[in-house]
Length: 254
Image (cartoon, rainbow, N blue to C red; front, side, top):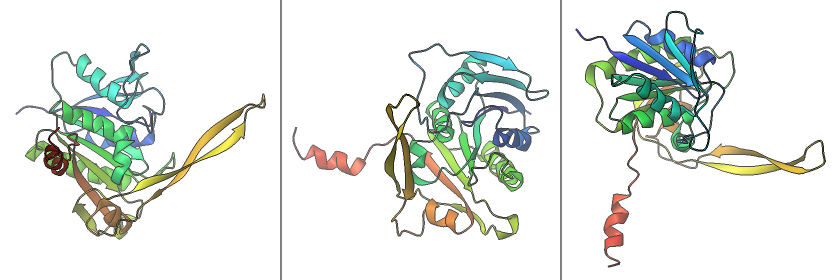
């Protein structure tokens, strides 16, 4: 029986607790290769490094694991990981466990989910895992159980080519979890504000702030289910074509 080849990454950096928890969840599932950013890379979306060299070095941070840190973005890490495998293709790519949720349109900003989407672009079943707790010392014990369950299912059943899973886990006691919901992405947006500040030389600079807001009344979304203590699983894809608009625009006779 073939032993699965599993590529791990994240966007919080190689020394984040969530990545160690992700590794702990699946270390017995197959052969592990880990490559993660050498510093936090949250909010990088699908950025890649094109104007600077990408540095990558082997590390001994994880005992007994073939692991590397990378100076680039989460997507760079996936690309580099596939390159370093020298023709061997991962059976699955796992990203996370992120410190903080990646619900709804956060998928567009998230480095965690960008890594999973990159895997989908390459035809590799991929999953991004997030826990709704931003604390550095967050408790990932229940999240590890979810990682094991869903990763095992994907290794067994596979995923439709070109899709990945966006999994969000509520930050509540396990006995308050109501279940797991496969659902659709909710509609939400960031209400951005900038705080004007001055540096030590008296020059102005701006700090991006804001709040994540949803007025979506649809109850069948990840936003609603996560708020009601369900683990949410959203099948996601990189094809952002609005097919309805394609047909409407054809009527313009351009």
